[in-house]
Image (cartoon, rainbow, N blue to C red; front, side, top):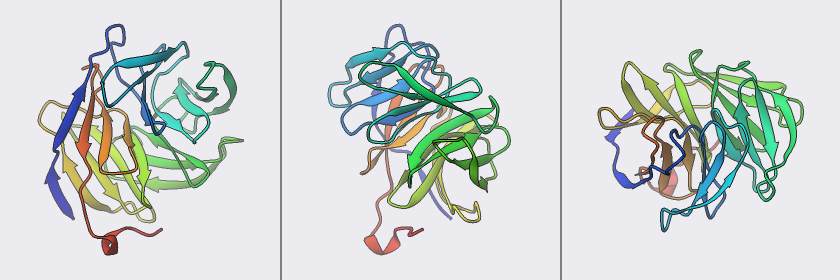
Length: 219
């Protein structure tokens, strides 16, 4: 297993009335984060908050290229990012114990915090298509270049780890500094992960480890 220390590239926030950062996603331009009763967007170039939607936003957040998806208590909401209107809901697989949320391969990927699991979920019905077991509490979840990454927060320590989506084996681990928790997790599709900072009210960008093209996971 590869291990490294997190390289924090930038800290964003706190953002005034947003006391927490729960889920985090990226729409290709802005970073969105959940803060209990709002979905907020900020420009990662300037760090300035640019939008806020009044929707329940208790945990993970995802973007499918057109819509936002947001965990709220025991459901996943599909949201129009322009109007903030909730277009539909499906049941959350962990019934309220859900944490991270990601979009990949036409499906939603949902963390089950204390059960140490990640579910692949049908975005239309909420049916569980696959269950991946890992060995630590799951907070954020993201896919990038065929790699499955998730964030952890357990025993007062947090890290971001790449796991084998078939076996759950930990392949790579990025250790966060002491006292820094990761709630939501999202890749920018390049060399950055955006990490929600929970009660700190911050979002941190950390460097995604570089490797040659021959080392990419193909799944």
